[in-house]
Length: 417
Image (cartoon, rainbow, N blue to C red; front, side):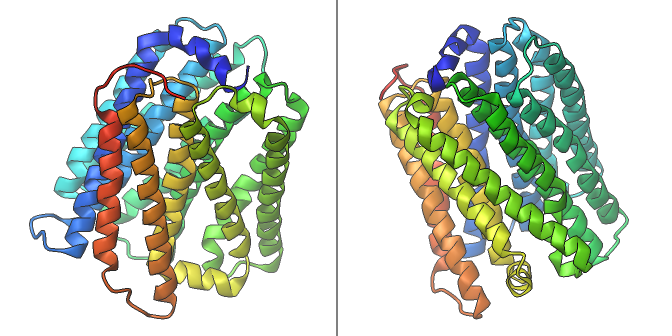
């Protein structure tokens, strides 16, 4: 049981492994673009439009990496629930998401927010709508509806909700509306319901499915789900504290931040008591990566709790390096490390020597990158420039790309411990 209960996913085959490999290749492309972006900041690359490439980088990271792999793993959950035709039914949606992801990768660097990129990104949103509706219906068909299914329903619901922020951003850009507060509110709305809704709820659904198969009662897992679910919508306002909320709303925001930390404490307590059953025979490297993801999640939720202090909130949202460091902490430290750790803990991809080496390099690159970003952010508070920080961040980007290159290299299909 535990993480090994998905061992039967091997029968699912080629389909799931192929889609996961595509998503990992996409992550390597994301890292490569990150290298180019960091090179342009540190050195000289005149023919690259930094802002346009950054849009392509972020959109492809969301659609080509996180969304692609989450959709794959969510369909895999249906297969485990005896839906043998799941991958056949969802194949066209996985292809559609992949095509729109590559479309945005090409269009945004060329024209930024222009007609083609907006049309393709809109199509990407519609693909997510269709996936969400179809997946919700398939979850309702399951004989046993547990808390994992609740997480997955929340994930696809919040993915759809996040699109309201994306549409608002596109509207303001096309019409050249320069209201800074409205722009930031829409941007943070999209990011919040992507990061803390679609991404986080999807990952928690995968984790919860394993916890249920490890013998943890569904009633305890339902408590954790409810705390995070109730906190999610008001937690958006943690990103808008600079708007000076009324006292009653501010109190709700504080309660939401506390609820998230309480849910984390309950989750840690469950994991502590059942860690051997949960991890099963997962490779050591996968266990360590999942542990780092859990640490990153703890740091993230504590930072959110700390942000309810007005003076700290003003500092955080007033300095772009801190915002960038926080977003990378969540996307790389919490979400990406969890998904990669999960994939190799479940043995969905063979763990060869070269792949294991790549995992170590990539994880090390994330740690170095985050330390540098936080150092840059803290130094910005005192208006101090760290010598060579941009060159070091370029080096961290190269390390992450090198690790992903190793992970994506073809090698012998062998599971290591």
